[in-house]
Amino acid sequence: MMMRGSAWVRVLVAALLFGCVAAEGAYLESDPTARDSEAPLHPPDVVRPAPIGQTAAFFSSLSVGAPWTSGGLTVFPLLRRGHSGLPPVATLAEAFSSGRVEVRERETSIVSEVLVRNNSGLSVLMLAGESLVGGKQNRILRCDVLLPPGSGFTAVPVVCGERGRWSGEGSGFGAAGEMAHPYLRRHAATGASQDAVWAEIDAQSGRAGVESPTRDYQRVYGDPEVRRRIDSCVAGFPPRWPPGAVGLIAAEGGEILGCDAFGDEDLFARLRDRVLRAYALNAVCRRDAMRWRQVTVGQAERYLRAASAARGYEESAPGEGAHLRLTGSVDGTALVWRGSVLHLALFGRGLPPPPPDPPIVRPFTM
Image 1: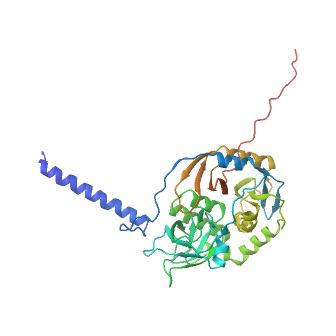
Image 2: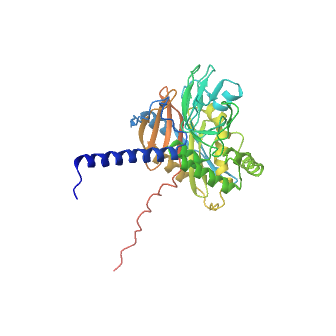
Image 3: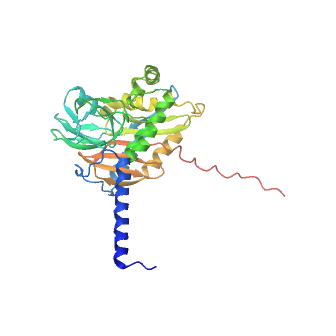
């Protein structure tokens, strides 16, 4: 039986309406904090090819030092030739402790953004993976942000670090928590979904044997036994690092976990323990690592060379400087400010393949 044209139209409109409602329902279910009436406070990401001269110069200035091992974690100091000439910046923890930074929820709170204002006379560096404690739930920064002095409230992208809480007397954040371990930081910095972030938090909590009623990531660091093991691991590294040390490559059980390098020696010295503790958390919670395997200096150097060959893409992000995404056999991010790399973060993807063995030459016999 043939359907009249007007009937076809009604069926088509009904199907389209049903599809729109279903799609909206699925979106709202996956992000219960979505607000259709609010536009983002920062522009959407713009990805475009970026010049790599600045990062290439930074890579070429680095050399890998002799490793140290403590508590299953192996660290290679990264030594830099020359000086960046960058002006001083404050770290997030320093700005919080001096009361010179304000972090609060948006007026209509959403999970994926918080507002940050820098009231100090220095630019404030916030690292991807650093935690913000308080608000309606604890958050983890998605990207490096450098806020200029006297900035107004700026929307900063974050992910949820405390799945089971959405409440609080005030909307402010009172402290900078511990930094995310390397797998979680990679999720945050590379734009992984909130579900993937939650899954990694649950997995790390399970590896640590820590339970939290609100599934709070910071509770892992707060566990007395985990904190004792982290403290012991970090204390096993020398208090004085070689002159020119601006970063480190971290490895565990034959696997390179990642790399952090900074624009100058002073900035790295102030952030070193914070970064070390994040890598140490990974090491003290891993029970399946093959501790008898060790990454060599040659392998760390090949890892760095592989990263230096990555392609660079500039992404829009709040604050000062250019934000680069590095993609290749080793992925990472870089924050370039005033013509120099302020912070380079590389993510572990296992070891780069070793160079091929030389051919075996046998004497010719009749």
